[in-house]
Amino acid sequence: LLKQVTAEATDGSQLTIEAKVFIVAAGAIESTRLLLLLNRQNSELISRKSDSLGRYFHDHLSCVVADLKVTDRLALNRMVGFKFESNGAMRNTRFELHPDTRLRATVRPCFAHVAFEEGEGGFNALRNCFRALQKRQLPSLAVVSRLLLDLPWLVHAIWWRFIEKRLLYPKGARVQLHMVIEQEPITQNGITLSDEKTDPFKQPMAEIHWTVTQTDRQNMHKAVAALRATWDRSALGRVSELEVKPASEIENGMEECGGIFHPGGSTRMGHTAESGVVDKDLCVFAVPNVRVVSTSVLPTGGGANPTMTLLMLAVRCVDDVVLKLQRSND
Image (tube, rainbow, N blue to C red; front, side, top):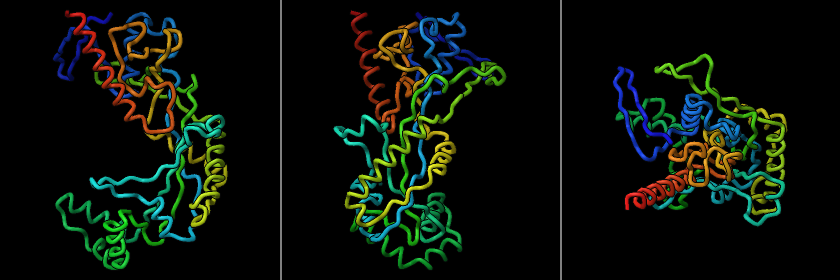
């Protein structure tokens, strides 16, 4: 069991804490680094039964997969344009696999959404105007001039904001389809301790070894093909046509995205110490009074952002810790 942790500041001052339970919640990459350091400092205690620590690193892959050839721009805007909620939040429509679809047997978890390229028109000028006001500055003359030139669009956009409850696509903006897909977790993708780079405390930094595999590329193409077939049969197909980008362009987009900051897998959850780093209660198998609250415990990426899942895991973890500490004190 871990008995105490000593924290050190850059000025050399230290703080030592003794506790019954320690929770590592420093983000996916840093949490993995801390466990790698703990492992190294204690005779490879964590990795003794499993080589999972630091491996199976994955992220969501995202890229533009198609341009939309729109025949009825306003109709499309009403269907999938960014929507303003009653609380002022703005949401976009996501296209996901149905829970019961047969496609789940062949297509990795994924989602798609429609977005637009902003350009230099009234929308961009309006956004720059708001940014200036947020900084308590007056908008530049160029921004004001651009707004005046696109005054008809601006008036129309205000109407859409309050009547249609949608963000009006900028005039002439290019409308595109983005696909986000789960990456295959493989042992070759992972996090290690650097042999050269150190932090201010002379501890090795984390190094990420990550690549997009041929399987990832094939999964993306399957997802795009499935969505295109559905799109063509739906009401969306009557107001727009998907012009899917060449396979090489999609694959280059996957490589260039570098992931979208949804890292996971490198302290993966498992049923046993041989299959993972932490158990279902987020306890490190080798050091059971250490828990990891991070997306790094997720064995796979799933088809959605991991933030809410992480929050639910955190709440469950705290409830469990409190309950067990209460029982131990009774």
